Image (cartoon, rainbow, N blue to C red; front, side, top):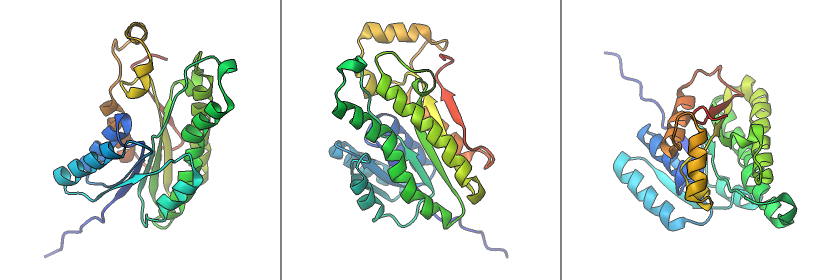
Length: 246
């Protein structure tokens, strides 16, 4: 009688995992049976509670890390504790809303370090782990503003434009090695990042969206899972998820 082949466990690292999109992605990947490395910068208590929930509910190994992925030393320390990796979801991100000429150099650097530099820091250490298996998936969470730009969000738009170009270039570099790199360009998603806008602002935004509603973090998570199950030939793509807005 032929023995049933058991698939080896799969491991995914998610940055910005304590809430919003990152939390939703963690829950969906746990449902898919992935063992998780979950990273946050400050919300350690929230992340610890999430780890306990997912470990108990889905019977997976779930390890929390507190690290600033915009800091190369933190990322080095993080990956020193990781021996295998199948999926990297670069989700950590911050925004800045305001006039460019009133933005400080430090604010600019923080946006770029968190939103763009972090992709370099994580990917350069994740790729060697994936090359060992000649397989892997890197998914970057981007924004529609990376393609069209947003008034009062120049730094954020520039960082996400960089994410899109980074995605396309790295995909070409890694395609011969069986590693897919894609991005999801999100529209308006119901996360804490948008809490800075008034109710009137959010209503005005919703009225511009053909789907007539704000997107949910779970929908981004569903798209992440879709990309994980997509054909290997799908790489270097920036998939727009915005309810038909842009």
